[in-house]
Image (cartoon, rainbow, N blue to C red; front, side):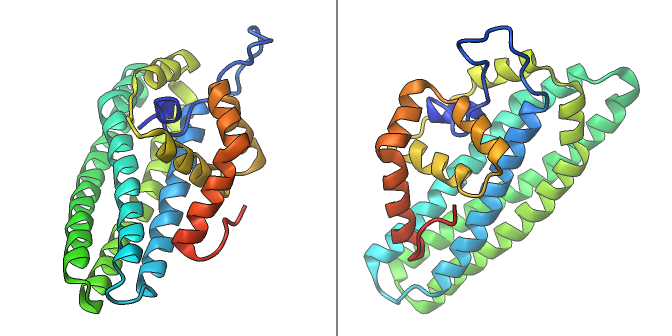
Length: 248
């Protein structure tokens, strides 16, 4: 997944203001985007595991709400990994200087192994979700919660390593033009309602600079939709999911 998913991207890359085409875009857009997405997924997996452990037995509507949120997170994360694998890391390896290429290649190799494990965990999570939906038992619910926590543990480890090894290289060597090309080529395909939910998840605990970067990178119609009704619908969706309003 890239900033394609809110118009066709989930967390869009920032773009130059339309009234100042000569303005200099702040460096590090790709790495900043990655960190926002990592923060979203880490928080939501931990929160989901906690909320699932409180869910009542045999309440189909509640089970559906929780497993649907897990499916959304899985779709976002799988798309993110696909874009990294197919476009981000190849672009990085082309961009780094010769003396850094071995370091970058080793980081990408480590990433590949770790994310293959996470993608397998996502399949396990889907299986646990379906078993809970069918069995509607405490045992199945607890197995789903464990699958969320196991996945969260792997995501914590993998993203920490990526942020320490690969993201500094993105900051240093991937140009704005390279990141823009990646962003334009990515297509996530989420429905409009889910795009706004993911936008809300991304904004929830962003710092002010990241929040401004995300919102400024959106198409005008999406910013308007967020301000007119998207924020309110996101808040209502979070209350249904967690039993409490968003933190931000």
